[in-house]
Image 1 (tube, rainbow, N blue to C red):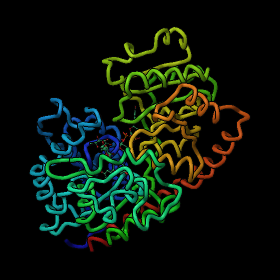
Image 2 (cartoon, rainbow, N blue to C red):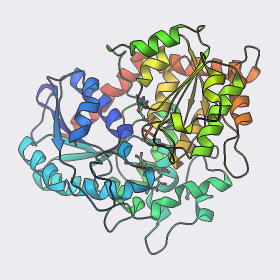
Image 3 (cartoon, rainbow, N blue to C red):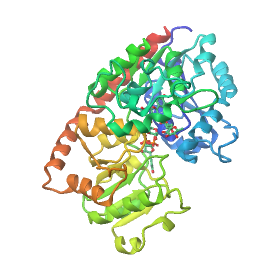
Image 4 (cartoon, protein in one colour):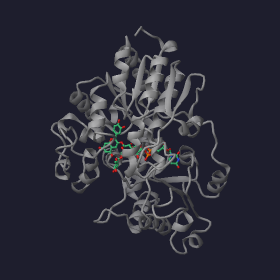
Length: 458
Ligand SMILES: C[C@@H]1O[C@@H](OC[C@H]2O[C@@H](Oc3cc4c(O)cc(O)cc4[o+]c3-c3ccc(O)c(O)c3)[C@H](O)[C@@H](O)[C@@H]2O)[C@H](O)[C@H](O)[C@H]1O
Ligand SMILES: O=c1ccn([C@@H]2O[C@H](COP(=O)(O)OP(=O)(O)O[C@H]3OC[C@@H](O)[C@H](O)[C@H]3O)[C@@H](O)[C@H]2O)c(=O)[nH]1
């Protein structure tokens, strides 16, 4: 490939079919486009309309839709992880792999300088023969990769990883605080389960990282330096960090309906709760969570998918709940503009699953942060936020891992009560990090990333 400057540098992006992955890829695309790069963003057809509003440079970023084939095990019409319960992700990865011919056609015709991908481990097999460089861009924390998705784990289908093995970090793992607690190994057992035809999740991600020219991550040295170095040494690859890649202030405005409702409360008084684009509660836990909000006595805005056993939010509400919280609590079963909700002056607390996107959004917000992680990587994100940075509190679990309304109330009160020492400390630490991760800081990361991306293709 010839040497390219920004104006003729073309990047093709192809991420895992999940909003929590496509969104950060698109944030990065915007940053590259802002500095003159052209981007072809390959994504499921239905996702085009879901993400279009986040494309800030349509003259530079072209969406190229692929048709997601129907696959036995996937509900008809499912195209992204938001359309399915999490345990069907394996079938979605089969569908993604079956778009390979379509992706190969786009790469051959566009002939980008570089391809950025994550879960589609076969991208280098297409790009290499064409002389195109590849970067495996990971939008989960470095800790989540370092703790299990590294060659040192040497996990195979024939020898599935055990909870006892997961309770101990791999040889050379460089952190003693960002680790799993004894019972939490369970949440990573899935890595040696099938994830696509003929390979496990571990095999897929380690293959994706072994075959690329460089590994990239949406994180920064200030938070995860040692973990990033560890990954680089495990894979013997250069590691390019993009930093947090946060979008500029949105030009869109919050839905009038929510803006008006939130405006009816004191500044910093409302508790907002969301658990990302994938997670679905079981009904008893969903109800317990709502009862926890009721117990706080604070105004709250909950945006969650209806629980597993219910078609609508209304049918899943606890008995008499609607009447009791009338005027101070809203439970909404649809999508909300999360970054705009977090930026609303009335919102003072964010209760979250700590998906990596929500983690960065919460760190950049003014809100107090309460975390109740659900999946493996979210547990490690929570460790970073609550134990390393000390900007958040984690809700205590019952012995069986469940949420209790009392523990949720305690966690929220501990950060929302004006005279709480825990709350004061979290606020102070949070401010320090928010000030550190300023526009200059994020821009420096992008400039450095661009420089190294250009060096890679020279
Ligand atoms: C079959 C089900 O699989 C699981 O769902 C897959 C989800 O994977 C997410 O991506 C990662 C998750 C984790 C994790 O939970 C714990 C870890 O220690 C590491 C990771 O890594 C990744 C990851 C890493 C690198 C990369 O390039 C990636 O593309 C992903 C993904 O965000 C999410 O969308 C998937 O649904 C599931 O947890 C479940 O229990 C299984 O049933
Ligand atoms: O109602 C909503 C919910 C979510 N969102 C947005 O959707 C995105 C969700 O991404 P998150 O990373 O927080 O969470 P998801 O659960 O969707 O992510 C997925 O990929 C990233 C991993 O860290 C998570 O473990 C995985 O579940 C955020 O940018 C959030 O602002 C909304 O805008 N509105």
